[in-house]
Length: 415
Image (cartoon, rainbow, N blue to C red; front, side):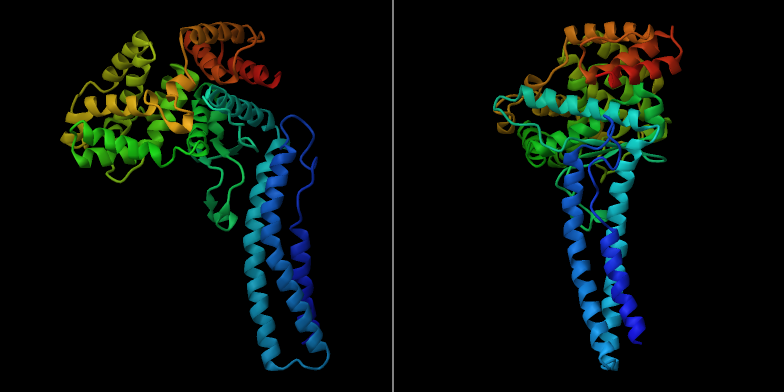
């Protein structure tokens, strides 16, 4: 019994020691490697998780010492077993968290590290574009977003400061942008980065609660039913991310969105009264409302004609008639509220004044696309524009898609 109890304390102590902090340089020293700030943030979280396990291991050691002195009574054994149960659960819990960061950081050493670095640079450029445009100076939050590759999943994000189950309900210390492999293979679909990073920007700027409240109040004030106002308020985060992505990346972001939400008519018009995403059929039309207001009327009409050819039947399907009837007015009001009304969190500016994509930017994107087709450095063009450049090059149809993908990643890695 004494040998058994001593082994339990030893096991717990070794488990706690093995779930060690990560070391700078452990995951390489290339540009794709996690920064010291990312490693320090993960270590701070892990330290908080490991300390209770270390304390429990010490309690087990003391119990074993008591048993070694001949006091291995039933109560002592039961106390040891209860502590062993707790230690086992703690180990499993901490291992899940440790493994999460181990995989997140370890991917940066794989052959896909360069792809993830490219996504990181797009995400950081989006942050910098917004924070530079604020009316009141604010530093870009650190650590910056880190990209992660996942298979069989849709793009998603873990926001900074949000408690996560796999982190033991502790706050996630930095934004993580999860990208499926098939998106990374086809970089012209990486408008997902602009969208997912916009969720983090909305949160970091303190707009998470203000935006839905503004939307609901605006729609009701303009005479729309409360039920319609609540619906659009529930959709606010996905709409905000879509519109922010469009302001950051330009018309090609709409093309990327259409690639995702163009589906069978029944699915495109499937209405979930509790969903946080706008119905796919309506989602594109909301983006076209902003595209027109940005000054890209011709592009908006081209997309509208395409959308109407994909879905020639104007029947709303499962979408409630009252949503269809009020859509035009509600969509215009929501786009205006999010993009063209001032927010104190933006220093009293509008989102469209903080960050915008104009005809000059479009010309830069087209020129960058031409350079990508010739494997030339696209020049001094913001990283967030290169997804649009890749899409423009692809749509031109004169260059193999594989070559565009290679040139896209090389252009971002040379920075």
